[in-house]
Image 1 (cartoon, rainbow, N blue to C red):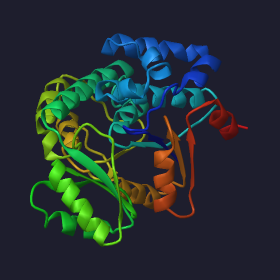
Image 2: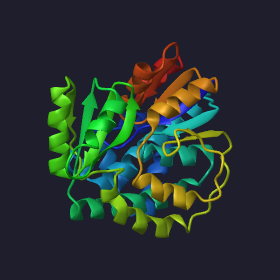
Image 3: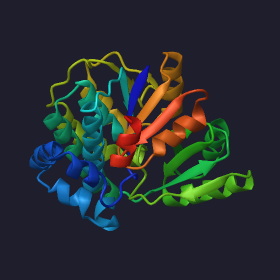
Length: 302
């Protein structure tokens, strides 16, 4: 069984998706449709923008989402089929479009509101995030609870990688304690402490747009960061999506749920191959690969 995965923030790079769009010009219309919704030239942002411009939350979120969906459409045009979707953080929005929960245009209405709210909140509430390697999640939770100030685990990425977020000084203190335990700690280049309570104002602002969107039950299985399992109740998606902004990403639990449900092939769509790596570090005996350019695409359907 095959599941499609969609990339999260931080995976962006200049020129992402360009070679696929050039080889399959029928996909250019997706750039035009998304650009009309968010009122930005996403073709230029994806293909030409430098690292600084791409790194802005208001640009990176819609650009990554669009690249992911373009890569998926290119694969579908070659006969790719899948039975479920999942994304990492902002990747859940590509998942919603891919599974029919929202339309393409409404997906970009959502991501525009989300990115702008998070960008504004990040500028008002400076925070930090760090990836902690080679330390059990339970130990990370325990250490965070002892630190003065606010710092919490926010991304459960694999058994060997957990991301923490919070107030800058508290994150730095936690990093010292993790290092003393033998962990490797990598500060992340982010604007603030995403998926933590420092994003509370963004969550509230985003909710005002989220509640105006029409949501449908997906046509295939949809796995959620919020619960770490398949989501089956779509009656209050606005509340779920708003809560998602201030809640941990339970990606490791999601992957195990997918495996238990019989999924054995994981295909990541979007820039870079971060999720492909997390699958390989978390699950044994499965197939995982990414599609982000013409080379990947042609290899997958050779």
